[in-house]
Image 1 (cartoon, rainbow, N blue to C red):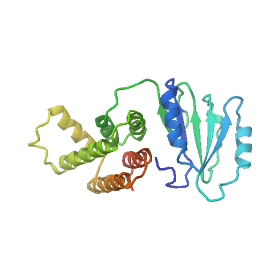
Image 2: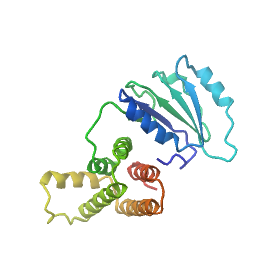
Image 3: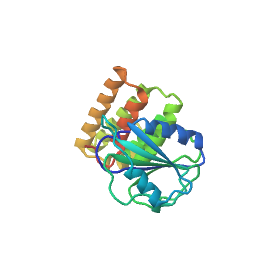
Image 4: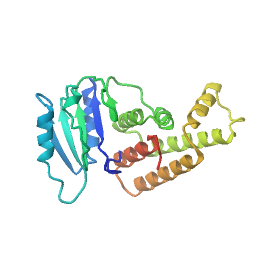
Length: 230
C-alpha cells in the first residue's frame, strides 16, 4: 500500500471481530509510515485529538506520520475537520463499525474466508481496492508464492485486454466466465491495461531484486485496484 503518493489526508478504518487478521493487517499498514502516534480511543474527544495534532512535530528526515486510534468506538465526531499535511489517521476496533464519514477506507475482518489468487484478481479487475487488499493480506499470511500472485494478475489483465479487443470468441471458457470478463473489462481502457502490465513488471523486477514481497505486492495491488491508475 503506497501511503506516500500524495499529501491528502487518508483515514483508514480497520475493524471486525477477527482481531488476529486485523492486527496483522495493521502491522503491515503501519510499516508504510516513518512515525506512528498512538491515541487511546477510550474517553477520546475532538479537543483531545486536536491537542495531539497541535503538539505533533514532523519527523526530522521527512516521511508521513499516522495517528493510530486504538479501540475506536465509532464516534466520528472526534476526528479533526481540517486537512492535515503529511498526516493520516488509522482507526482500529475489535468490532464491526458503521462508516459514517465519506472518504474512509474500511477494512472489515469479520470471518475467515477461502482466499485464492483468483479472488484477488477478481477484486483488482473490479477496482475494489478494499476487498483486494484484504484478500492479499490473507494470501500473504498463507505464504502464497509472490510469483503465483503476479502471474494470476498478469493473466487476468491479458484476458480483459482480449475481451476489450473482442478476441475471446474462440476461447474455451464457460459462458459465465466469459460474461465475468466482459463485466470486468468495462472498468478499464486500453491505456490503463498497458499501465497495469508495466506496474506488474516493475513489481516482478522488485521482487527478483530482493525487495520484501509484502511491501512490493501491497503497493502494486493498491495501485492497480484504485479507481484511477496514474
